[in-house]
Length: 393
Image (tube, rainbow, N blue to C red; front, side, top):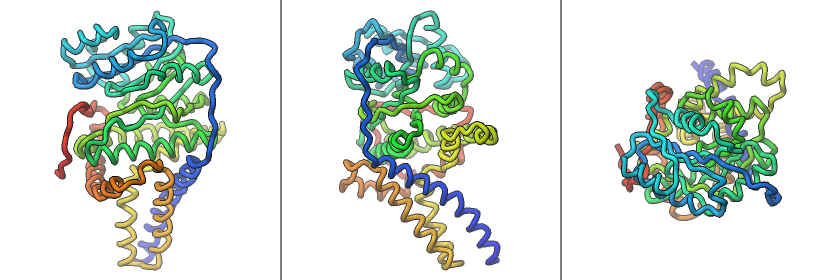
């Protein structure tokens, strides 16, 4: 029995050690000062700006109205809204604001399908790059000007800094902190250490010809992860813009959080398996950026690590106390990495109080794993624009 426990403990310890060291390295990388400046753009490029929208009547008009305030020549960008299952009054309001409204008829709904529809509709227009935003996203008036400066410098893939638009519930507040940890570790920390940033689903820019070639190959519910995979295959570096903000609405209750994570977890597993199938090629071609991403895609949600390790330590305390201590050290390193990754502005009393809700978030994420199969093939919609209260069930 004791031998079996030692074997199980050893099997668990190796991946947890890799994952937590990974977090720690890039959390430290985030704290390394880096002066990233881009020269003033020589050319003003033309942009296709796509807003995929499914039942987003509550937020999409505000998002388009906000985007129209850009300090960038209006004739150099076109806004396309893929208006899936939206009201006629909403579509009319969007057209009045100057957006091109596409009403899809595809049978299999996904964000990838919406992006492909927009690309097909504008195929004959001379755009230089495509910008992808979610229906609830708001940006500042200098967004395109800043993006243009980076694109003009030669960057073919860009990820802006997505931040929380709302913190009206504890779930939304914690979701905002979680996004900032992702920004610190998977984006700024990576770029500071010379690796490409991770994509995050919106606030993204791609060179138009590359995007037109790759997007038709993508049909899954995890289009951002597949786009990352193709960028890494071709050795294209994704630049992260920490000072260019995209305001994104955070989920406001645990049921929506569970549904959202179900889709994310399913997409991560599928992309990991796709990348892992080419592991030998990764080593042969020395594609270290892809290897780094393979490790990242193998990591379960952080809340699972936060909840599982204490439970496992308690089990070891009962059955084999001698094995417990290295796990305690590992957990302390994990907490240190998260502490480094959380931006300083979140070191407040509210954050401390909100952390008391983490056990309920842990349960919600566990529920997500039970729906992974449907998350692979079924479009999961996260409602926006509604004020909701937290509930426990």
